[in-house]
Amino acid sequence: MAIMRRIVFWLFFVMLGVSVAAQETVQPTTEFEFLTEYGYNLTYQHHANFDLKARTTINRHFELDAALQLSTVNHYTAAVSTRAVFPLPVGDMYLQNRLMYKLLCFAKLYDFNAALSLGYRMDYVNVELGLFARVMDEWKRPVHSEVEPIIEPYNILYRIEAFVRPQASRWNLSLCFSNIDDYQMERMWQPLFMLGGYFCPADHWKVLAGVECKPTGMFHLNAQFYGVVARVGVAYKL
Amino acid sequence: MKKIFFLLAIVSLTACSKNLDLVGMFAGQSPQPDYRFDKSMEHNAAVGPRDLVLSSDDYRFYVGTDTHVDEKYEHTAQYLRDFRQDPSASFTLMLGDLINAQQNIPWVSEMFRDSCGTKRDRIYITLGNHDAYFNQWGEWQQEWGSSSYSFDVVTPNAKDLYICIESANGTLGNKQTRWLKELLEQSLNKGYRHKIIFTHTHMFKKDGSQGHTSNYAMEETYELTDLFSRCGVDWYLCGHDHCREITHHKGVTYIIVDALEEHYNNAFYMIADIGEQMHYTFVPVGEQD
Image (tube, rainbow over all chains, first blue to last red; front, side, top):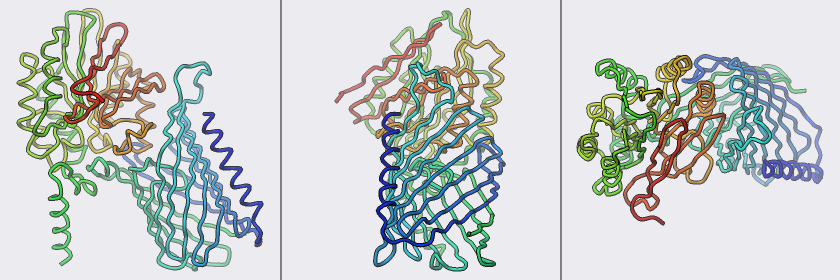
């Protein structure tokens, strides 16, 4: 736990430092997203999720996301993500950290993930590669217990996303292959396939929709369907 | 044209290796877990209970896994010989990945039974992902019957529950999950002394040794670990990783047993001594690093 605390502290420090050092400033913008999700998987069967997300661009070099998910299967997820953006002649490079805390009330368990990744985004493509660590533990483990939390220190994070139009367009579609999304970090051998899109019917407003498919056993070389999530929602830009 | 290209791609992928089912990365070639579970239940109903009645409250069993038998199998042979010759060993659990290459299941299964001599009916086995490659479930089922079952070990003053779950696809599937929940929840009122789950896939991914092996989806990890803790499971025995790891989580001990695979320089098997207390020891096989 001491190592995790140190990692989190340094990630925060680096992000703060990059933000303060940013010379070029733009008007901060914030976008709020509200999505409802229908999900089915072999474990929970049918369930629904409600997502609330805020994306803030503080300046040209610093972005901050915060997300909250409530699920009908009695688990709750909070996530914070910061990005230090380094504009390049073509596209942006970014250093991103994610902190995700999942409270599994039905199991009296928490699952905390911390990730650091390096990404590159252009009009039509976004790629990201990084590492994340996981700590899982029961809520009320006695302080003097000899049992230790489950620590999975080395996981690879990857995300490859392609868009059919430039990312700032009025509508867009994307296809994504990754082991993470806004509310989960799967082990590296457990990929997610996502199809998403949005449309802006009016200034400030966006309609969002997407489907996410999770197979299992791909790296058992015995792949099969595990779960699917369909989501729709709206976004409002301040 | 597209169909021809697709077929050619599948054929060439399959031809790449006789050990690795690369097509299975996109669609497992054996029937899906729910189908296998149904077939296992049909078999269980046909053969009846597999309970073992032992004359002492203290007993011993052997655990071996990931034998990946190909042409040479000295590690496996030593394991089976040790089990056969140990008079206090009552039965063995085999945790999957019996074979490596195609067409090995029939002769390897026969070799296992022959090597165990009079204890040939004391082998309790589960299906590993390698056993299910290349649509080999049919062969496997013909040899071993069922990949999901439970049995009681009944001693003069106690009763222990053993549950074999099948995780060759990295999931238990719908039906097996329901069956497992029901079985474990019912077990709460049956006065079991110990409860042991055995399967192939490991639950956690704590170190670099698991770089090459995949787990359950996180949702399934949360759900199963909670179920095991709520229902008083003592041990979760598995292989898949090839490298020993012992984890205590919410009252359950999760044990990954080392592989017995040939050419593997850290091959071990596990001996479990069960009484009021439960103890395990690991026995080296072959050359060690």
